[in-house]
Length: 225
Image (cartoon, rainbow, N blue to C red):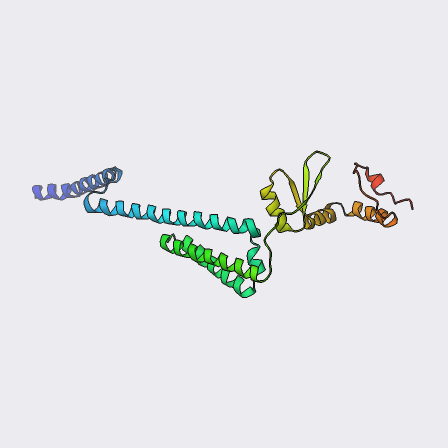
C-alpha cells in the first residue's frame, strides 16, 4: 500500500516534469538557426533564383527597347499625339494592345513581355503609316521668340504638341503655346485684359510695352473716356 501510494503521488509530478522539459526543448528548437538547403533542394532553389533573374532581365531588356523606339515616335509626333490622328477603330486596337503589354508586365512573364513589346512596336508603325496616309504631318518645332525684360527668351508655338517638342529641343527657352497664353490671360488677368481690350478698341494699333504694379484703387478706376 505504501509503495502504491508513493507511485500514485509521483506520477503526476513526473508528468509535469516531462511536460516542462518538452516545452523548454520546444523553445530551444524554435530559436535554432535554420540550416541552409542542401543537396537536390539547394539545386532547385538556385535554379528558381536564376529563373527569377532571367525573367527580370527579359522584362527589363524588352521595356528598354520599347521606351527607346517610342521616344523616337514621340520626338517626331509628340507625346500621345500619334494615336489621336488615326481612326477610332485603329486607336481602339492600339489601346487593346497596350493593355496586353501591361498585363504581361503585371504577370512578370518575361517571354510574354518580349512578345507583346514586339507587337506594340508594330502597332506604333501602323499608327504612323495611318497618320501619314491621312495627310497628317510630323511636328515641325517652329516657334516665335522674344527676349523678355529679365533677358530670358520666350518661345511661343501654335499648338501644345509643338510646345513639347520645342521645350525638349531647346531646354533654355521659356516655352508656351498660344492656347496656354490664352488660358493664363483669361484666368489670371481677366480684368486687366478687359481694360486693355477697351483701349485697343479705341486706339487701333496700341501695344502693351510695359506692365507696372498698381494699387487696388487705381485698378478699380474707370478709363477716363
